Image 1: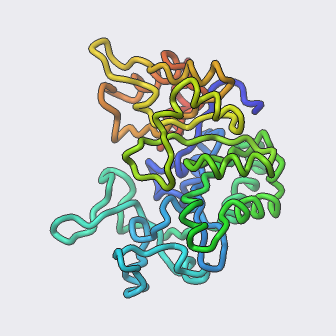
Image 2 (image 1 turned 90 degrees about the vertical axis):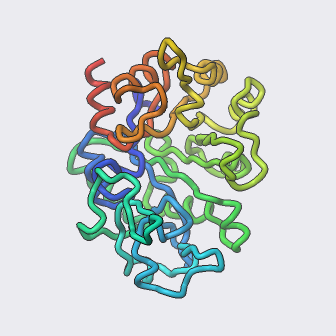
Length: 317
């Protein structure tokens, strides 16, 4: 990648201010100076890549109200069970859950109100079109940061999400823009297969073993020297969870060995996710967390719900 200095990655757009993955959230992040805008991608029943963080629809849309009775046996509404026309009928809202009283409640109460606005789920191609247009009108090259969500689960349902995403990138002219696209995934086998068919830089996402990510993946092993050497054979970087990069000690936030080890193997480090309304243990404020990540740990980029705050920090360095 040709970016100089750490990059600002808008996590689901400017999701601290507008509903995640709405086009409005992406436009705001672009205006705030994000270097890359993240697209989590799942498929519809007719195989269209759409931008949605979960394979489920119920946490961020009115699907239960609009399509009662379409849930699976587990009570969840899966994007893969709806065609694009049905997806386009849904309203997108701030992430929410049902509390013990049976009321819908926002995960982050101080963010955009649940009952306001009119937002829709975009396709991947629609979002790329928006970003491309803003790049032209604002004379700024913000890039794509695409995550393939649950590829093994999609495969078990009879769908190939990697092929669908690569197809959308090819149709929009982004299939070979190596300085404007990252592809990321938790599933290492998906990334290994992608390495054979795309020149785009790949990022190995790293979770925790008890998160229940699909497949038998040992994320603890990935954080060792041997694990990072293996990742370097197919990826250009890692996307760890912030607590894997920083630890809380009596002296404050201090770096773990992970970033330095990754750099020894030529890997970039783009941790997730900075939220000023959900700071990790030991961080008193966003400035302290930014300082620990960029100055102490030396990360190469950061996923942030608040791209304006991260951009201001980097500009003031």
